[in-house]
Image 1 (tube, rainbow, N blue to C red):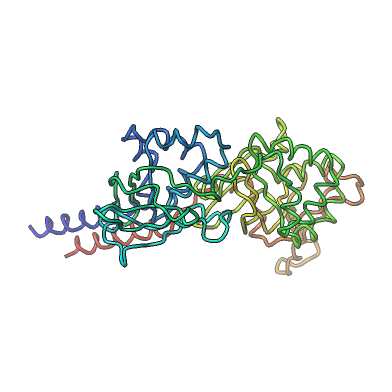
Image 2 (cartoon, rainbow, N blue to C red; image 1 turned 180 degrees about the vertical axis):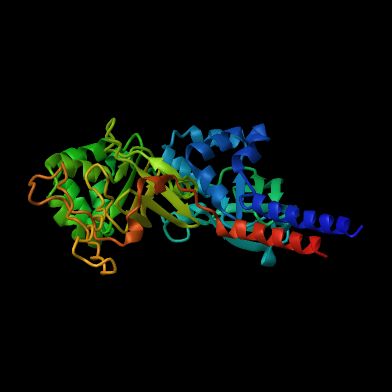
Length: 417
């Protein structure tokens, strides 16, 4: 008779644990808007500009959706995809504004930061939206760099998950001169100039010195490109190894730091697995593994693990990120393995101490110019020397599974009563 309450209480605990786990990523803006066909164009461009996955990564967000007629006003001007992304970013507020909060704004007005402001591309306060309680129960919305009028107002709440995401409808697009300013096409980007100005000058100079590698990067800009640039200190320390590579090896090493698709930071944080590079060529895979742990994203080869340390540029279709180490592919470098300990000499006593293990010198790489001066394997910590089978390792989120373990322990306690 006493077992039933224990099972019931334990079941409740486990249910609560799984509920918490399942709501870690509680919203999907694409699915929410898909239930409302009047927002189909707005929804389509959130996906096309890669704003949708960025919205889904936020834990507190408000999306000010506009209907298809309002979106047609934007598209009639034939803006570039980068400009559309900036304009829609103004409609994503980095705070929670449900219908009740909107109609009860303290002091009648509030300023909300937007995703456009967070990109760093908005000059001054241009990336803020003014929300003001107007006469007759209306609530007006306007970009901060607007002319002081309120071109749009609150229409209705579409869906709310307090205090995670609020999707509301506003009556029209929020004009913003800063967001609507034409953006240069990707092929016009000065890639090496951006790298040089933000702590990657050594890598940029090395890339400029390799016409083949530089052309590969430049030709990939329009179709989508993600660059992982080693910071100057890391690249300077690596140059002796780089100089020992053949001409083809040098090109491959540089191209190994580029991926022929666009990856925003939010996409990198949500995707684990192998990633091909500009150096990938048939059987010579030249790939690495992307792994994320919360906000930290690492790039793992069998030789070294590098961490993404910052964002230099992120506007579709180009993303540029800094990393703290040079990526070393297994196709060019081999990790050292310790030599087996030699067998004891016959005259040695059985209890004689065994000689210490020593690492053998690494065999010359097939991609080095001089067999007497091989490209050496890195002097990184043992933790960075990752075996091939580690690339498929599964990482567990300690927070979620720790919570599950707690729930199971409570269940066990009840069952023993």
